[in-house]
Image (tube, rainbow, N blue to C red):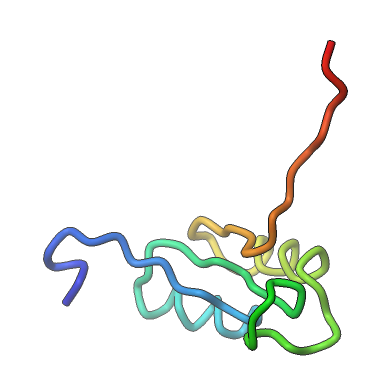
Length: 76
């Protein structure tokens, strides 16, 4: 229904299984969340840094991390 009205659908997935199911249902992207995202989803022992590469290998839609990951560089 949302996609019929030009909405972008992004699903929060706490596991690779959830991400695969979301892709099959036609969502546009998934956000991978685990126990360090300060919420109840993904309360297992596997963290985002392990789960995100597994999701990248398992689904072809865009994948995002629910955790604040960045690459810090010293200023020039």
